[in-house]
Image (cartoon, rainbow, N blue to C red):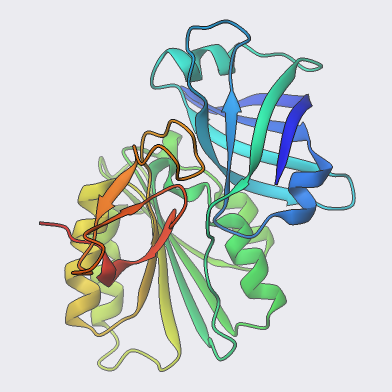
Length: 265
């Protein structure tokens, strides 16, 4: 785990209100596992005082670079969006537990809703390196302009299916609707198939019902407001079905959980 200041190499706007930032953070790039995140202090001032968590979108171990995708949703991310090339950021990471790829995995289904695409690109890279035969991703957003990562996934050879709520691109409707249509085409889902997903809670709740119906194992990356990012403050808990635990920490026990483990009630 690395704690220190890193230099911003580049920052571009990739969609309305959404940015992609590249930083030189060799220690993080070398230790990173798909699904982990970095905790960033966006300002040297006391306001905002808490760090912000960001999934690591892409890494390059040779150059020591890492990339994050984020959307401006509050004061912290607004400050981050105003950073320039050459500025430095105080980061902590990589943190959390990432995705687990079974050695016998034959087909990986990835599903990202909105900014939920952020932790999935490196997962696709890892699946490809491990020889997974089939990798497909479902990308969902409100409109075509908000679809992120399509080119990057296609460059990896991943099959991409897109859903937009307004019908401006691909399937018209929720990405879970597109996923349901596709999985229902298969009377018996292939063995050694697993779903990996990230996105807003309503989407994940709908996926929980679908994966239960089709007996499809699934892992999900959860988002939560965090203070320490290390599991000490217990401020980012999620309710689980384990009678012994009841709640688990998103930052320390996650952010990746088995979908069936999370209580969506």
